[in-house]
Image (cartoon, rainbow, N blue to C red; front, side):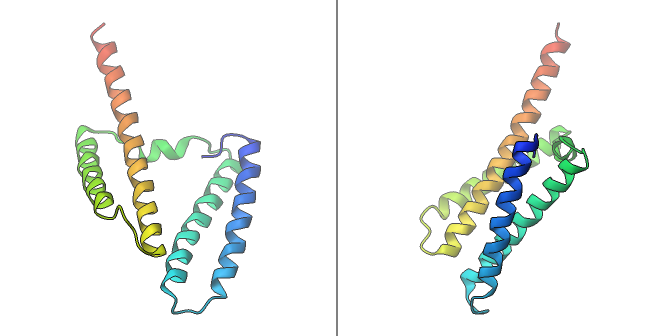
Length: 135
């Protein structure tokens, strides 16, 4: 999430690099599986950077996290189950042999880190609420 004008400038530079890389990849042969995997990953990153840049420009800073924040104990428990499954999958794929497998492992780790962050925010919020309720 972009917080200031400096981060905006950096994000715009990264977006330009991603778009240039996308053009280069599109020039490779169509049946190359690495090309296809990279195009998907880069396309998703381009969308993410574009959304964040537009959101910052529209003044909607900080609201994205609230939209996806865990709100109930059952959501938190479901996220813990998903996290455990991701951890198992990451352990199984811990020694990638191809570029596609490395990209896949990177995406799994990114998702794992997002789930961990959501759980930490949920637990901090509800622990703080429990502490203040006992005062």
